[in-house]
Amino acid sequence: MRKFKFLLVILLFFVNCIRAEDEEICDDNVGFRCSNGNFIDCLNKCDGHKDCEDGSDEISIHNITESPCKDQKCTNDNYRCNYGGCIPIMSKCDNNMFSCADNSDEWKYYCNIHPSNPEELKSCESGHFIPENKFCNGRIDCPYDQSDEQPFLCHLRDCSLRTHFRCKSGGCIPKYKICDSIIDCFDNSDEKECGTKEKVQDSTVPRQGCPIKKDSNYDIKHEMENYKINPGEWVSANTRIIIKCKNNFFFLGRNESQYRICKKYGAKYVWDQPLPDCIKYCDASILHNSKSTVAKCSFHGSMVPCDKIVPNTIAKVECANSYKIPQELGDFGSYEMTCTPQGNWNKRKINCQPICGRQESFYDAGASEAPWHVGVKTNLYEKCGGTIVSPRSVITALHCVQREDEEVLDHSKVFVIIAGDLKNGHTQIITVNVSEIFGGGQIDIAILKLSEILTLSNNIRPICNTESVYIVESKQAFLHGWPKDSNKFADVFHKTELQVLPRGNCGANLNGSYICVRPTFQLEKNETLCEGHSGSGIIVENDGVNYIIGILSFKPSRTKTCTNEPIVAVMFNQIPETLKTSIRGDRERMFELDANGVWYK
Image 1 (cartoon, helix red, strand yellow):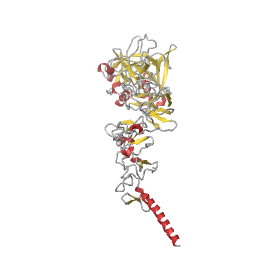
Image 2 (cartoon, helix red, strand yellow):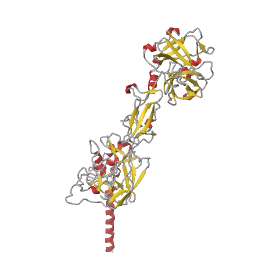
Image 3 (spheres, one colour):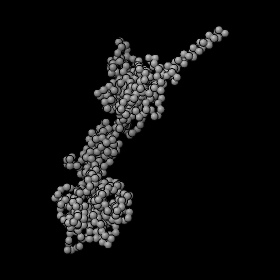
Image 4 (cartoon, one colour):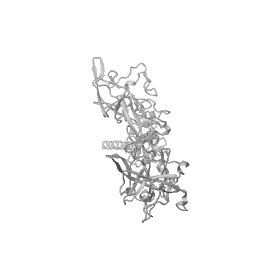
């Protein structure tokens, strides 16, 4: 009986010891026991805040790789700190205060996201981006700081000790680099305490064999053992490796993977095929995303398509028909860009600007007399004129797209009719949808934003505008319109000469936003302005260039659709500033931007 009681006491003591060990981790009845013996509520353990005086509820004070939180899993609405603590996800990268005990919630490594290569490029604390594989590689790669080798980051990263050596600072280097008289750990820990010891040689990464060239864009694995091999290392004979490219580099032809085998021939080790090159294609879209330019590409003197552009390809950029080099860039016929080995263009790509207000010679086949003039139609079959002021915008009268005392029509009910190029002896009629309509408020003016950028030609060009008083205050002008006796838009325009009259001729209350015009009297014909002329541009020609100075605002009565009396027109330079800004906004930048809105260097 005594023997049984003694055994029972021993058993209870053993159970209590186990329970005591559990309580040291965290017992809800007692709490979490800090390293100094104090207790805190279990809910405060691993919450990012050091509730123990010694911080042992978050990180060990003796070893930063040890933490009661290291195996902790965080819920989806929480962020896991580098050492394992969990904090509310909205506290990550809030630039407010540190919420993780190791401050990892505000590390630039996690908070600065590279716009195009977020997986391959990570941020130093200085804000500079370097390849992710340069973090914790034993060397200092971040400019201005050592944040790529900080112990809290590196000691908690995986490092296969079978093939690699961990520097005291936490970085990870291949084992064969220990004691090779070359400092590979920036803290020199790979060369300390070497004495006369021979260099440690790892049989899985021998010095004899086939070398892998030091291409930082290589991602290499041993096919059979599935471990990573770094560029610059050697592999033994009969080893088959899988090579992939990273950092947005590709193999020629965009193959995803390449396989190579190290072969031994006598005393020599050679690859079964030469190691492939990882290249980065230059952005080809930048050559095609503007209608203002055309590009021709060549490689070593031979013409090649302007897609999948490999390094050393030269792109010759020229202005498209009806465009010209911006005056700021000087006068030259073409502009050459070269694709660099880094996959970048050596120059920013130029854009050209439209040739405005010029008519080609009538001897040029298909050249339009008024390439800026268009028709404006609504779903109600009403017809007005309009003027191209940019490859994306047409200006017309507001009443053409608005019923009396009603809202502006929906853009889907308005169409722009353009006389295009000749085909089979007849002018092609192009119908373009409207995507937006901007009204001039109390002024009878409207800007129609087209659903597509016009392809300019001899028949389609914008008009010029100017602030020159000499031109704006001209007393002679003209407009073009479709023939008024036609029920459809025809191949030719009708030109009407105009006189610009004092404003009082159109009404005593006419303010400075308007001008007054009437058809010029000619004995041989009686010119009139009709309903279809509404919205047409009032044009002045000077030294071979045509400028818009106004927009006709004729509103015929129910019984009178044509007149030779004075008619009001809106002065172009007096239209609302918002409409001027809208037109100016259509102009392309002088130099192209990349997909992320960054200037090409």
